[in-house]
Length: 332
Ligand SMILES: [Zn+2]
Image (tube, rainbow, N blue to C red; front, side):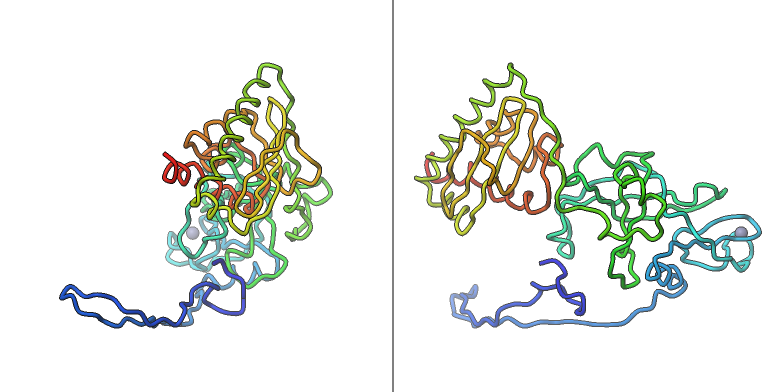
Protein backbone atom coordinates (compact mmCIF):
# COMPACT_ATOMS: atom_id res chain seq x y z
CA UNK A 1 0.00 0.00 0.00
CA UNK A 2 2.84 2.48 0.49
CA UNK A 3 4.62 4.35 -2.30
CA UNK A 4 6.72 1.88 -4.20
CA UNK A 5 7.12 3.36 -7.60
CA UNK A 6 8.48 6.87 -7.05
CA UNK A 7 7.89 7.64 -10.73
CA UNK A 8 4.11 7.49 -10.47
CA UNK A 9 1.79 9.75 -8.52
CA UNK A 10 -0.61 7.13 -7.20
CA UNK A 11 0.91 4.65 -4.76
CA UNK A 12 0.64 0.92 -5.48
CA UNK A 13 -2.56 -0.57 -4.18
CA UNK A 14 -4.76 2.30 -5.32
CA UNK A 15 -6.24 0.31 -8.18
CA UNK A 16 -9.25 -2.01 -8.11
CA UNK A 17 -9.77 -5.33 -9.76
CA UNK A 18 -12.15 -5.15 -12.71
CA UNK A 19 -15.32 -6.44 -11.17
CA UNK A 20 -18.94 -6.96 -12.15
CA UNK A 21 -21.16 -8.17 -9.36
CA UNK A 22 -24.85 -8.53 -8.69
CA UNK A 23 -26.55 -7.05 -5.70
CA UNK A 24 -30.08 -6.91 -4.41
CA UNK A 25 -31.78 -3.53 -4.36
CA UNK A 26 -34.28 -2.30 -1.78
CA UNK A 27 -37.04 -3.30 -4.15
CA UNK A 28 -35.80 -6.90 -4.09
CA UNK A 29 -34.63 -6.79 -7.72
CA UNK A 30 -31.15 -7.66 -8.89
CA UNK A 31 -28.85 -4.83 -9.95
CA UNK A 32 -25.48 -5.05 -11.63
CA UNK A 33 -22.52 -3.21 -10.08
CA UNK A 34 -19.11 -2.57 -11.65
CA UNK A 35 -15.81 -1.13 -10.44
CA UNK A 36 -14.74 2.15 -12.03
CA UNK A 37 -12.69 5.21 -11.13
CA UNK A 38 -12.64 8.96 -10.91
CA UNK A 39 -9.19 10.56 -10.84
CA UNK A 40 -7.97 14.12 -11.06
CA UNK A 41 -4.30 14.86 -11.66
CA UNK A 42 -2.81 18.31 -11.52
CA UNK A 43 0.54 19.99 -11.24
CA UNK A 44 1.31 22.55 -8.60
CA UNK A 45 4.32 24.75 -7.93
CA UNK A 46 5.80 25.27 -4.52
CA UNK A 47 5.77 29.00 -5.25
CA UNK A 48 8.07 30.92 -2.92
CA UNK A 49 8.64 27.67 -1.05
CA UNK A 50 10.57 26.38 -4.11
CA UNK A 51 13.96 27.76 -3.04
CA UNK A 52 13.74 25.79 0.21
CA UNK A 53 12.78 22.58 -1.64
CA UNK A 54 15.53 23.13 -4.24
CA UNK A 55 17.93 23.51 -1.32
CA UNK A 56 16.84 20.12 0.04
CA UNK A 57 17.67 18.56 -3.32
CA UNK A 58 21.18 20.02 -3.01
CA UNK A 59 21.53 18.72 0.54
CA UNK A 60 21.13 22.19 2.06
CA UNK A 61 18.76 23.53 4.67
CA UNK A 62 17.94 27.20 4.10
CA UNK A 63 15.94 29.88 5.85
CA UNK A 64 14.87 33.37 4.77
CA UNK A 65 16.15 36.12 7.07
CA UNK A 66 14.79 39.64 7.26
CA UNK A 67 17.73 42.11 7.41
CA UNK A 68 15.52 44.64 9.24
CA UNK A 69 13.94 42.65 12.11
CA UNK A 70 16.12 39.52 12.04
CA UNK A 71 13.08 37.22 11.72
CA UNK A 72 14.06 33.90 10.11
CA UNK A 73 11.40 31.98 8.16
CA UNK A 74 11.87 28.25 8.73
CA UNK A 75 11.27 26.63 6.37
CA UNK A 76 11.90 29.45 3.91
CA UNK A 77 8.36 29.78 2.56
CA UNK A 78 8.38 33.52 1.92
CA UNK A 79 11.08 35.96 0.79
CA UNK A 80 9.33 39.16 1.84
CA UNK A 81 9.03 39.95 5.53
CA UNK A 82 5.37 40.26 6.61
CA UNK A 83 6.45 42.40 9.59
CA UNK A 84 8.57 44.95 7.69
CA UNK A 85 6.41 46.12 4.77
CA UNK A 86 7.47 43.05 2.77
CA UNK A 87 11.15 43.90 2.85
CA UNK A 88 13.24 41.55 0.72
CA UNK A 89 14.64 38.69 2.83
CA UNK A 90 18.05 37.09 2.37
CA UNK A 91 19.02 33.44 2.24
CA UNK A 92 20.72 31.99 5.31
CA UNK A 93 22.21 28.55 5.61
CA UNK A 94 20.57 26.79 8.56
CA UNK A 95 22.54 24.43 10.77
CA UNK A 96 21.82 20.75 10.11
CA UNK A 97 21.35 20.14 13.81
CA UNK A 98 18.43 21.30 15.92
CA UNK A 99 16.44 20.91 19.08
CA UNK A 100 13.08 19.17 19.33
CA UNK A 101 10.63 21.93 20.27
CA UNK A 102 7.89 19.67 21.69
CA UNK A 103 7.67 16.00 22.64
CA UNK A 104 6.66 14.31 19.39
CA UNK A 105 3.48 12.27 18.92
CA UNK A 106 3.79 8.77 17.44
CA UNK A 107 1.32 7.87 14.70
CA UNK A 108 0.13 4.27 14.96
CA UNK A 109 -2.87 4.32 12.63
CA UNK A 110 -2.09 6.72 9.78
CA UNK A 111 -4.19 7.99 6.89
CA UNK A 112 -4.26 5.73 3.84
CA UNK A 113 -1.34 7.57 2.18
CA UNK A 114 1.03 6.48 4.95
CA UNK A 115 -0.20 2.94 5.63
CA UNK A 116 2.89 0.74 5.73
CA UNK A 117 5.02 3.57 7.14
CA UNK A 118 3.49 3.30 10.62
CA UNK A 119 4.35 3.60 13.35
CA UNK A 120 6.25 6.84 12.80
CA UNK A 121 6.99 10.06 14.65
CA UNK A 122 6.84 13.65 13.44
CA UNK A 123 7.91 16.70 15.32
CA UNK A 124 8.73 20.40 15.22
CA UNK A 125 12.42 21.22 15.19
CA UNK A 126 14.03 24.46 16.26
CA UNK A 127 16.91 24.93 13.83
CA UNK A 128 17.45 28.69 13.90
CA UNK A 129 18.15 28.77 17.63
CA UNK A 130 20.19 31.99 17.38
CA UNK A 131 17.52 34.06 15.57
CA UNK A 132 15.34 36.45 17.65
CA UNK A 133 12.18 35.08 16.00
CA UNK A 134 12.01 31.87 13.98
CA UNK A 135 9.54 29.17 13.07
CA UNK A 136 9.94 25.49 13.77
CA UNK A 137 10.51 23.00 10.98
CA UNK A 138 7.94 20.16 10.89
CA UNK A 139 9.74 16.97 9.94
CA UNK A 140 9.96 13.20 10.29
CA UNK A 141 11.90 11.70 13.20
CA UNK A 142 13.72 8.36 13.07
CA UNK A 143 15.85 6.31 15.44
CA UNK A 144 18.54 3.71 14.74
CA UNK A 145 17.61 1.88 17.98
CA UNK A 146 14.58 -0.05 16.73
CA UNK A 147 10.97 0.84 16.24
CA UNK A 148 10.02 4.31 17.46
CA UNK A 149 8.59 4.22 21.00
CA UNK A 150 7.73 6.64 23.80
CA UNK A 151 10.58 8.30 25.66
CA UNK A 152 12.92 8.85 22.69
CA UNK A 153 11.67 12.02 21.01
CA UNK A 154 11.16 14.26 24.01
CA UNK A 155 11.23 18.05 24.16
CA UNK A 156 14.76 19.47 24.17
CA UNK A 157 16.40 16.50 22.42
CA UNK A 158 19.38 17.40 20.20
CA UNK A 159 18.83 16.17 16.64
CA UNK A 160 20.83 15.75 13.44
CA UNK A 161 19.30 16.32 10.01
CA UNK A 162 19.66 13.36 7.64
CA UNK A 163 19.04 13.55 3.89
CA UNK A 164 17.61 10.72 1.83
CA UNK A 165 20.11 9.51 -0.79
CA UNK A 166 17.58 10.06 -3.59
CA UNK A 167 15.85 13.42 -3.24
CA UNK A 168 12.93 14.94 -5.12
CA UNK A 169 12.42 18.35 -3.55
CA UNK A 170 9.94 17.33 -0.86
CA UNK A 171 9.88 17.66 2.92
CA UNK A 172 10.16 13.84 2.92
CA UNK A 173 13.71 14.26 1.56
CA UNK A 174 14.87 14.81 5.13
CA UNK A 175 14.33 13.35 8.59
CA UNK A 176 15.97 13.86 11.98
CA UNK A 177 17.81 11.39 14.22
CA UNK A 178 18.90 11.88 17.86
CA UNK A 179 22.39 13.42 17.73
CA UNK A 180 23.55 10.95 20.39
CA UNK A 181 22.91 8.09 17.92
CA UNK A 182 25.14 9.62 15.22
CA UNK A 183 28.71 8.27 15.22
CA UNK A 184 31.14 10.98 16.35
CA UNK A 185 32.88 11.32 12.97
CA UNK A 186 29.57 11.97 11.15
CA UNK A 187 28.07 14.58 13.48
CA UNK A 188 29.44 17.58 11.55
CA UNK A 189 28.92 16.10 8.09
CA UNK A 190 26.67 18.12 5.76
CA UNK A 191 24.70 16.63 4.21
CA UNK A 192 24.64 13.39 6.17
CA UNK A 193 22.99 10.72 4.00
CA UNK A 194 20.57 8.02 5.19
CA UNK A 195 22.82 5.31 3.70
CA UNK A 196 25.62 6.35 6.09
CA UNK A 197 23.55 5.23 9.08
CA UNK A 198 22.41 1.71 9.96
CA UNK A 199 18.66 1.45 10.52
CA UNK A 200 18.41 -2.23 9.53
CA UNK A 201 20.13 -3.94 12.45
CA UNK A 202 19.32 -2.21 15.73
CA UNK A 203 20.93 -3.68 18.83
CA UNK A 204 18.27 -5.13 21.19
CA UNK A 205 18.33 -3.48 24.63
CA UNK A 206 20.14 -5.45 27.33
CA UNK A 207 17.87 -7.22 29.78
CA UNK A 208 19.32 -8.92 32.85
CA UNK A 209 17.57 -11.99 34.23
CA UNK A 210 16.13 -11.30 37.69
CA UNK A 211 15.35 -14.42 39.80
CA UNK A 212 11.99 -13.00 40.96
CA UNK A 213 10.82 -12.77 37.32
CA UNK A 214 11.57 -16.39 36.39
CA UNK A 215 8.18 -17.61 37.67
CA UNK A 216 6.44 -14.95 35.55
CA UNK A 217 8.36 -16.11 32.50
CA UNK A 218 7.25 -19.70 33.21
CA UNK A 219 3.64 -18.52 33.54
CA UNK A 220 3.92 -16.74 30.21
CA UNK A 221 5.31 -19.85 28.50
CA UNK A 222 2.54 -22.01 30.01
CA UNK A 223 -0.10 -19.52 28.80
CA UNK A 224 1.49 -19.48 25.32
CA UNK A 225 1.42 -23.30 25.18
CA UNK A 226 -2.31 -23.24 25.95
CA UNK A 227 -2.73 -20.62 23.23
CA UNK A 228 -0.78 -22.80 20.77
CA UNK A 229 -2.97 -25.81 21.47
CA UNK A 230 -6.12 -23.65 21.11
CA UNK A 231 -4.84 -22.55 17.69
CA UNK A 232 -4.90 -26.24 16.67
CA UNK A 233 -8.66 -26.21 17.28
CA UNK A 234 -9.53 -22.75 15.94
CA UNK A 235 -10.02 -22.35 12.22
CA UNK A 236 -10.07 -18.55 12.53
CA UNK A 237 -6.72 -18.56 14.33
CA UNK A 238 -5.21 -20.90 11.74
CA UNK A 239 -6.41 -18.56 8.98
CA UNK A 240 -4.78 -15.63 10.81
CA UNK A 241 -1.43 -17.44 10.70
CA UNK A 242 -1.76 -18.99 7.24
CA UNK A 243 1.16 -18.54 4.80
CA UNK A 244 3.42 -17.07 7.45
CA UNK A 245 6.71 -18.52 8.58
CA UNK A 246 8.96 -16.86 11.12
CA UNK A 247 10.66 -17.45 14.45
CA UNK A 248 10.08 -14.84 17.11
CA UNK A 249 12.71 -14.82 19.86
CA UNK A 250 11.65 -13.23 23.14
CA UNK A 251 13.97 -11.91 25.85
CA UNK A 252 12.55 -10.98 29.24
CA UNK A 253 13.83 -10.34 32.76
CA UNK A 254 12.54 -13.84 33.59
CA UNK A 255 14.48 -15.57 30.80
CA UNK A 256 14.07 -16.30 27.12
CA UNK A 257 11.65 -18.27 24.96
CA UNK A 258 10.66 -18.60 21.34
CA UNK A 259 7.47 -18.52 19.29
CA UNK A 260 7.48 -20.16 15.90
CA UNK A 261 4.77 -19.29 13.41
CA UNK A 262 4.55 -22.09 10.89
CA UNK A 263 1.84 -21.64 8.25
CA UNK A 264 -1.26 -21.75 10.45
CA UNK A 265 0.44 -23.25 13.52
CA UNK A 266 2.02 -21.73 16.60
CA UNK A 267 4.85 -23.61 18.32
CA UNK A 268 6.30 -22.52 21.67
CA UNK A 269 10.01 -23.11 22.34
CA UNK A 270 11.51 -23.15 25.82
CA UNK A 271 14.66 -21.43 24.61
CA UNK A 272 15.69 -18.84 22.07
CA UNK A 273 17.52 -20.53 19.22
CA UNK A 274 20.13 -18.79 17.11
CA UNK A 275 17.96 -18.95 14.00
CA UNK A 276 15.33 -16.52 15.37
CA UNK A 277 14.19 -14.12 12.63
CA UNK A 278 12.93 -11.39 14.94
CA UNK A 279 14.17 -10.62 18.45
CA UNK A 280 11.78 -8.71 20.72
CA UNK A 281 12.49 -7.62 24.28
CA UNK A 282 10.03 -7.21 27.17
CA UNK A 283 11.43 -6.50 30.60
CA UNK A 284 8.16 -7.83 32.04
CA UNK A 285 7.33 -11.38 30.85
CA UNK A 286 3.68 -10.88 31.91
CA UNK A 287 3.26 -8.82 28.70
CA UNK A 288 2.79 -12.20 26.99
CA UNK A 289 0.51 -13.67 29.68
CA UNK A 290 -1.76 -10.63 29.38
CA UNK A 291 -1.76 -10.96 25.60
CA UNK A 292 -3.03 -14.56 25.81
CA UNK A 293 -5.80 -13.36 28.16
CA UNK A 294 -7.15 -11.04 25.47
CA UNK A 295 -4.53 -8.33 25.85
CA UNK A 296 -2.52 -6.81 23.02
CA UNK A 297 1.14 -7.02 22.00
CA UNK A 298 0.66 -3.90 19.85
CA UNK A 299 -0.53 -1.97 22.90
CA UNK A 300 2.56 -3.16 24.80
CA UNK A 301 4.79 -1.96 21.93
CA UNK A 302 2.97 1.37 21.70
CA UNK A 303 3.28 1.90 25.45
CA UNK A 304 6.99 1.05 25.33
CA UNK A 305 6.76 -2.21 27.34
CA UNK A 306 7.79 -4.30 24.32
CA UNK A 307 10.84 -3.42 22.21
CA UNK A 308 10.60 -4.17 18.49
CA UNK A 309 13.42 -3.94 15.95
CA UNK A 310 11.45 -2.73 12.91
CA UNK A 311 8.10 -2.16 11.20
CA UNK A 312 8.00 -5.74 9.94
CA UNK A 313 7.92 -6.93 13.56
CA UNK A 314 5.07 -4.50 14.19
CA UNK A 315 3.13 -5.96 11.25
CA UNK A 316 3.73 -9.50 12.58
CA UNK A 317 2.32 -8.47 15.97
CA UNK A 318 -0.83 -7.01 14.42
CA UNK A 319 -1.53 -10.54 13.14
CA UNK A 320 -0.64 -12.24 16.45
CA UNK A 321 -2.96 -9.83 18.27
CA UNK A 322 -5.94 -11.36 16.45
CA UNK A 323 -5.35 -14.84 17.89
CA UNK A 324 -6.96 -14.50 21.36
CA UNK A 325 -10.13 -13.08 19.81
CA UNK A 326 -10.25 -15.64 17.00
CA UNK A 327 -9.91 -18.43 19.56
CA UNK A 328 -12.58 -16.94 21.80
CA UNK A 329 -15.01 -16.78 18.88
CA UNK A 330 -14.32 -20.35 17.79
CA UNK A 331 -13.97 -22.14 21.12
CA UNK A 332 -15.64 -20.22 23.93
ZN1 LIG B 1 11.35 41.93 9.10
